[in-house]
Length: 155
Image (tube, rainbow, N blue to C red; front, side):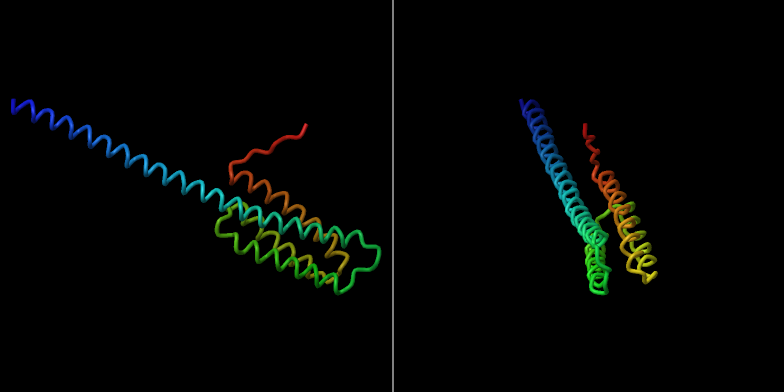
């Protein structure tokens, strides 16, 4: 009889241990999934912020392109300030963005310096629009890839 109590006690101990271990595994899995979800949301927020910044910059340059009057120093100062605002947004986001996205942003900065270096406001506007538009398109593709999103085709 003592032997059967020992076997039962052992069986109950094994069962209790199995329940505890499966509960612990569930907690670990839940924490891992939560961390992944939080990381994804953080990346999405930062990609959205940088893409909005590029979009705003592109809209400003587009408005400057459509001006019928000559582009003055005030317009260029506004453009430079807007680009500096974008650079701040991008710099703060570089920590969580994927490597492809960071590469796009670094190339944009280098190309912008070249465009700005011409000193010609018409070139700054025309080339600036091309550079920003291309960077926006490439960053959008990098963000979709990094976030695991697929492009929805429009029919």
